[in-house]
Length: 189
Length: 166
Image (cartoon, rainbow over all chains, first blue to last red; front, top):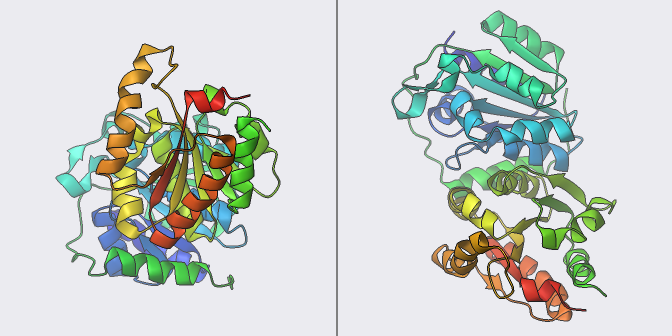
């Protein structure tokens, strides 16, 4: 499975449940933007490592709203403490999906430690998270997304990037549109 | 009123309802006060950079967030302050125990103690230097208002001598 396929599944779930969705820095954000550009998406352009933290802050602030974040293996390795903080807070409206392709995809596919055996599902469990899912197929991911609105999913994909254009929106436009959506009452299906 | 109570009063007056914290010895009275306040969501984080991310999410979720931290954590946060908060115009109040200044017993605190104000100036982050307890209460309110009106991180620096006041 390619990362783009995983992002499509995640975006479909977010759209269906009217979840707020944080997109990770770099090409994953562009792939999300290309797949499904809706006001529910926050495109994180900088601050590598903080997608899961931004998602946590949103989930704790908006307990009635479903929140999802797309993270990556390189990013999680940079902010692993976030997994322990998420376990401590454990909001039941927060689903973190870590796409693990074993590579720093946006910078030339240099290998990450997960390509050499670091196991983010066990790290997430060891950090105290009770609901941790692990899959490497599109069908597996779809099934997990259907059955849960919270916890942490590690989805292993192939390295590589889809040929997608840059996001044309400015940071001001991204946050303005996103906050207008976030401040609306939840109307999840 | 203790120095910690004066800071807590400022937090309440400023309408702060979401706090992330990384401990400092000077915050040992304040953190439990915040933690037991039912009107404040308190999230202990593992690192200040992480806290900047959590607070950014909280702001976008409608909260008025602040971070309790030691000034050493400013060094851990600079990329996030620049490429998240400053880039998008996200307000954040950093209430900082300023170590490495007059009265500091630990030599390793001195370099960041001296670098804190210059780093904030380089980042164009406004900062306040309260001396009295009343100053601290008042300046936290002003700093939070500035953070929201200018859509920027703002810092309040509380040095060692502040915490030693009777």
